[in-house]
Image (cartoon, rainbow, N blue to C red; front, side):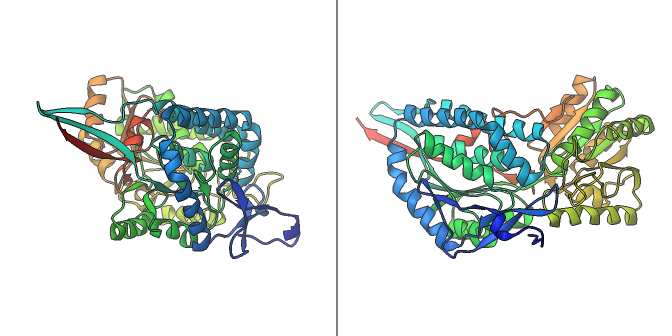
Length: 483
């Protein structure tokens, strides 16, 4: 966090926890400073929570747990639909918060807020689904299954898509009858707190949604270790995911882990090259590349490689930092992305466009990076293997279909894959063999709240979104009755 002489701490707005339906100050009285990445200046003081704050939040959730579970499903659904409506009604204010925290363009923030509302709308409707099955075991036995909530769910979200990813986990957890203790990133906390406040405003019982602010080591770890937290959903880095996994294994609790990607975007010679180039650039510049499903490895058939890379260069030229490209959200990540420019140069990658810090008039202190594309990249290079998490793509040539599949799967990640071809038979063959949780053909990343989302390999396990997510926030009980 930055401390600037021209910004007095007394002038910064304070953001506190939301526990048991009310704003609560941190038990230790400490605060962190959040920085607006368009200026590099501190703009907010955020509660720096501890295990004591987590304990307060979990206690509130436990008090609310039984009543929320016994709520008639229709009433849970009604409250979730009311929250969706409240998010939409406050979308401009929420977008202003998102933009101040993350610096992203307003259009992107509004789209993410709409998606957040849709999560509560979608799962608020799914509460009417049957919660089990009747099994035909024997004439003298009535056997049925039922899905039951875990109880207290811990939700830990990253800084890149704050409200959207909080809603993605919280909505299905609530629909399944759970209560929640969530920790957003200390860097982008405002909209998650506001969502919880709106939930209380529309009638959610106190303690059903609790938000504890602070760092991962202080708050995130305390959530995962708390005896009353019976499942954790985490989105973030592989390293932190592994650390959470070790704690969860000791406690024998389930996880949903979404840990990032280095997704392959495969362009065959018979593709619509203009559309593929435009979508490929969108694939690694959306949200300034700070998206786990970014299509950062662009695999291009050698027969069209020169033509297609020129089209990529032309599309990149349409992206303007400070206009339709936001900043890198954190100072540390800003430095990390710049480090990859040096790595790419040392490995022999050729800069096709970008490759340096961007200067934005009037926002000279902002964390802006030029949209960057490297050509003549070998898949073994670090720039092709490691998640940069910035607006940086690499163009890798391939020869045959088998070659494309081999390169695409030569990664520790497996979140999404995209391929472009007019040959639907080939598209389906390749889609079947790509090791990823989501595959897109002739379109980039058109996921909706209805489509299950999650990864293979080091991209994690479990699924968010879709009907599938409710199953990850409930466990199955079988009841057998002798008749």
